[in-house]
Image (cartoon, rainbow, N blue to C red; front, side, top):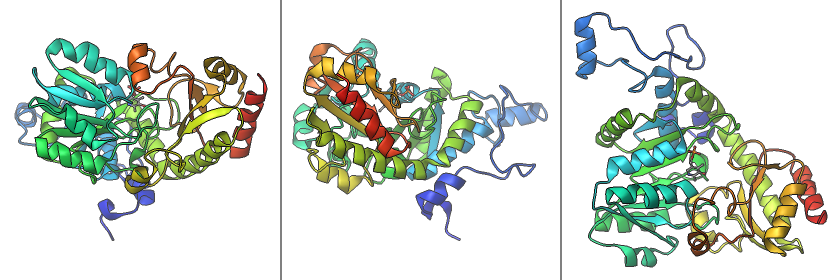
Length: 394
Ligand SMILES: *Cc1c(COP(=O)(O)O)cnc(C)c1O
């Protein structure tokens, strides 16, 4: 038998992180407990000193959480995972672990809205500076490197413009300048893209999206490459306190079992919908990594096994036309988030990216008329019919 690390993603998603429970439970049970009893005083002391393995307190470690952490680490080809209470808890714990006052961050301009505002609004108060730039061009990144640059942060494809950055090329630059490369892999999931294999130092996820996939959990995960990094991150998370709960770990672990087949279906559906939109007379432009019209189509094909399920587009008639569509669709739910089994539609300038200034949004390519959809696993003809009647209704 091959080690699970060598198995295909379809086997890994079902079996990773599943361990032999004392009662033979087929999936990890929910250890819904805050604290664990020590056998005696020496045992407690020995656990705290790290001389013995075991559980102490759920903010530090918990069997249900650990099962999920191990599962995602296997999928990403990493050493270990660190479960977090949300994707943003994973993002903030990563910055708090790797940065100190005086450091400089280079970040994709197309990035999840709160990641932008965390760097600009919160970490700037701790003397951490950042530049938000077009990271699809390595030569452009190089222009912003200073002797203080400690971290390059990529989201690829980026939210919501779906700009793609070349992870391998950026990782070479990061190594050359002695900076960490962190990749937010939320839009791809490890089924489609494995940033650690491409040279990233740290990968993180909003598991709220594809990994859980069922619209019922907010959670995050950080995946690191070695034990030293793991210990550093674990200390920060224990102290910041943004841990995931056992129950949410259970739900995400359950969601992951169907991740590979969900991604197949989502990529197929999204490909068909993107082509439909691109050929529609009322659609001005479409941005989707699976369309040859995408500016970094070749880079994306080289580093990812599929386009994902998020499509950005603009309608002739701009914002008003977009609003009319959002109000008219019936299967697509008008809601933020993405990566679930259900299709969603939303308006970044007024919703997910409303916390950014209009100036920053326009610089990042987020026009007021941009509409973002997240394609689910429904019947694709019915999804297209829904968009079609929505586009005709105005
Ligand atoms: C949703 C999202 C986040 C934040 O995750 P939460 O679970 O909502 O905190 C971070 N990055 C990307 C790309 C996201 O889509």
